[in-house]
Length: 502
Image (cartoon, rainbow, N blue to C red; front, side):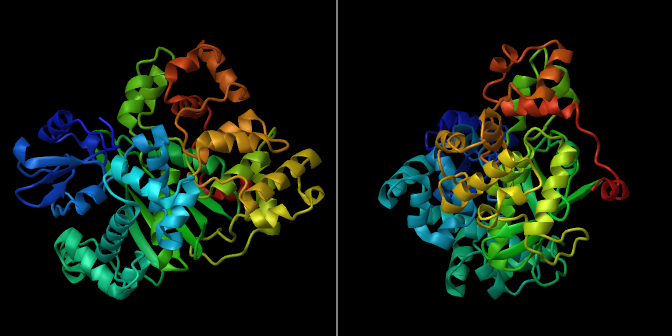
């Protein structure tokens, strides 16, 4: 069963009958007799098989004239994990649409990013996802609007433009059509569930959907271990960082905890402070990338957990994620900074660069003072002035130049293989760096780093080999790599200890 327009109706109906939460977000069930569409795990009575059809996206169901179920809220699910695995044109386009690219640059901008004409891209997405780019973007705007309506006290006019609608009239019509309720009615329904609380200007609190199990504590430990002073802050239970968004700076604080298996979809609480509320969708999508929110941990753990070498590690930490990124260019630059130095050394160097070249920002979170330096700024820096060996400094400036002029794009739009070739063509960028960037910045689930010294050491201690074992772990070698690294990851330090280390 795939999310690309080739759904097996019998398999889908079996999932619906069993209310299997693993398929939430993979497909949607539309019921002809009621005119609504649901997630597979909807608790309502299972409709007769002759009365249902299946859609690969919420936008596909909406385009067919169905409205969202008020009981199971089918749009509040993680995206399909297949989009990350296949990384085909449809998956790449969906990532950019979720980031709000169509709202900012139109269908033409989306088509240019993925390398197709607008007409051909429209045909492809209609075939694969059941809806054209504008319909997919409209569904995303509707979901963002519902979240803002039900979880903030923003005036509805502000919600309309924050969600990306061009007018209040368009906002009202879309919300009525998708949810069979006016914005005011949705807000009242949200109040009855006690989800809305008073917010300060520019502040939005969301629950970001993730599949369970979710090893939130170990994800936090990884992020805390690599924290860059001024840009990131971590303490037990939470991680916060600044965000460089299309319309201005922002801040996010995530509350990370383990979510056990059994619930299907879990939620990570996220607090956003945004300079411009039009960045709401982009901010939430980029943080979801950081969380690896669309991963299917059941599929990953089922394969890796049966491996004789990795099995005990998977059983000890089910639902381990591959940390993603909120800015691909930042991830690439930080990867070059970290070449051939310890993590602590890389943090120190990155912190000095942030203080020297990053833009200062105001944040409600203590310790967050800067945005990470953008590629255009670093592209004109004298390599000799950087706090690193000259060869690495030249490599960093060359990378920044390629990112600034568009020779290398790390927004998950281009083909992964094309990006890897472009990175390897740059001076000072080798396979380890290119592959690490692919794993973190592009969300590649099947990357392995055979030359990584820590990986080789852990494998040797476990009685394995980088020459033979990783082939058994396809297509989830990135997750296998995280389980090996996880054995070396310290717990998140207390705040006072973190300050001293920085």
